[in-house]
Length: 349
Image 1 (cartoon, one colour):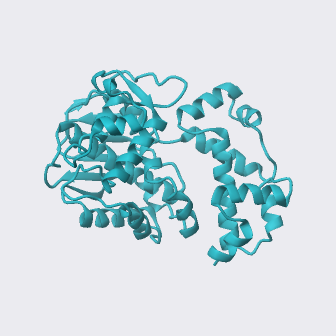
Image 2 (cartoon, helix red, strand yellow):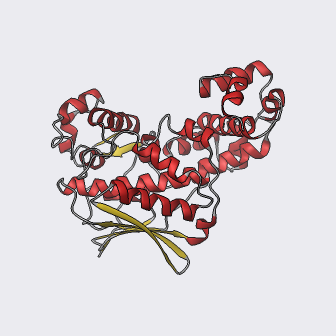
Image 3 (cartoon, one colour):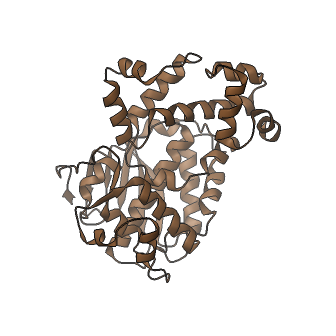
């Protein structure tokens, strides 16, 4: 087994970027499905000559665009990597299958059962080993693509599972170590950012370890939250370029604790013993921003209170730190496409 934690991490600059190896992987199946990789790259504004430059990187936003283009063009959320296509809507059905699970442990069990139904090539199970829980991905048969496609199939499926369960429990789920069942790819240096601080290669199967205590976490999302989540998912959870968003989570916690007071970025930076510029840059490196975290927190709390409580709209707006009802109405309409009163009427319990 090859250990590669010592591989130097590639610099990502001031904005998050994706190693070209992930682009090569995501394109691995499109040719066998009859699509032109060159056409897809052009539409995503990615220069085709970058595929032959091993050190090349592209912005996360363009990678996300390519992700969605392939899904839509193929009607396959699995990028033609597998023996059977995962038709559009597969991810939504997976979400609905796990949304009612009471805990993370049962959610993972349901994910494994769902994937057993729709995937012939890779199987998923969850094991316990001492104080660790282990997400195991095994190969039932080789995916019908080359080596780069096989690597990407494992990478994508792990990110999909990990991103979904972290969203379900509304809590960071840092992986302690991941063993991958293939030799180190050219973009292995980025694995520390994407997966875990420790990782190995040439393992018999993929094993992703995390603290078993996290299996007890309750599933916190509901139908209203799912509707918002599905606007950008699964692309949003499989293209985030960090194994967890620890700093973003800390910013979110400070913002929530301060409600109904509204803390600006400099105030949060002081609480985290950072300069505002450093906080802005580090959040950008985690694929997010102060504004996105603040809006995400407010929108989630607004939806939760509208659909699960009888709090007056004016109270909800005030508790979220809005200056008046009109400001709350404008923000909520921008988040969901409908006003808060109408949203409560449609989705409230």
